[in-house]
Image (cartoon, rainbow, N blue to C red; front, side, top):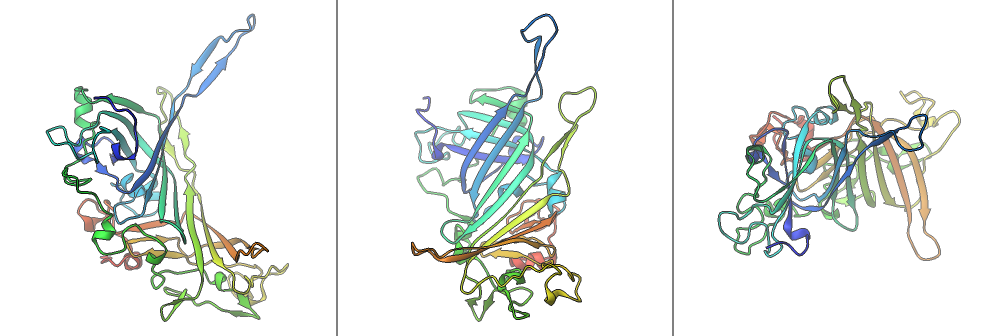
Length: 397
């Protein structure tokens, strides 16, 4: 029977390396939303002698798929879209392409695995997007709410299929079937966050930030009378279990800014390359208890004289945020403070806050214990550095 509507319980998303067979799909867990936008690029040609269009030329269509999930111990969307990556950084991930399937299932069951029979877990309709590139990623850990991941994939190919399609090409590498027990056992039982099953907090929230393994920039601690108040290295934002900074929000993001490289003899791009160098932005908000104590001097901060940042007001800093569920964001050691703002604390009773914005270029390694490209998980060849492995508590060999 046809669906009356489509809602969250009758949709599921699968991703696999481009061109791999249907059994290669990995189902994404914890997905909150998915959207697909298709733009048909039109260019008009006119001619002398008439007002009408001479030809309305259709260029290559652009397909954009945007997804958001909670961080929950299951593989991240960013990693599912680059399962065959051989290096963990932005360069290695950016080259990989993925096939994405959005399946629409019966709206009469509690989950896509309910119903019984041979066709349990099969879609009623399916949109298949091939050769999708990662175009942007964003991560947010708020003080009030769930830690989330947002990913945008871009490509030039999209197809819709119905459940009764039997074309060989469809059944061999496009068809998407959710394996049994993915969303419960088909008996009314439910799926749970992997981190919950691993006793690591379930959906990650503020209490799951592991400050003892995280590294906050020293500029957040202020510089009063020439004395830098913060230490360097892991755990610099906590002392004897007590946070030294009252952090309210952490977010980091980057956009690959894909560029089409075209060639004679074909309509599709030869490749869609990221426009390196790409900027990585990180914003950290904290409750103000005194001030930011960051000066702005014409000749640079006197406390930086004699260092590599002599004559500047800011210096390069390291940022790492680790989560209990096995995820960490390593932004390297070259982050520079681009702005700091003090606000709030107005007469309505709000608290004054400090917002620090940092930028670097090309440095963002998203580390996750469930990464399908990691050799330790049996599916790939990727190895994190020993330090990165330590952030999430796994063996770095």
